[in-house]
Image (tube, rainbow, N blue to C red; front, top):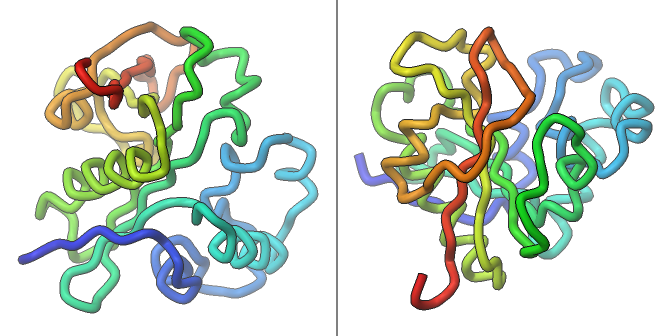
Length: 194
């Protein structure tokens, strides 16, 4: 398998990974953290969520990256400047400093492609995408599950081990807990000489 990670500029491909089976279903579409206000997140329901993602895919930078096995889309990672997400005001996940970091908060691998290393490619691709857009660092907020199994519906945040293998280091604890596991703030510094 030769995985290639590309900017998420194809709405049909984003929809293939994030969209619901029924168009009227009210699913996340990876907007819960991407939208800067919880009010906008609450007010967007059903098909309006997909339309909002369609708008974001048309913006520069697009809202994340997609992983492809040949021409088949097999995964997604959300990455964006933290200042343009709800993490900028999140009370449970601290701001470590004033660095204009990017946040990487969601990793999704399509069924049938899990356990093949796609998540590792997505993390690396998201870091390179952020670097190409001038990010001085990328943060993530994975669970510190210490090797224990994470429920698949909550695995989207990734694990501390996944990010550490990609060169991230823990810089802070958080007050956030997911699936019974504490979340930690990990960071990969992209500044030259660091």
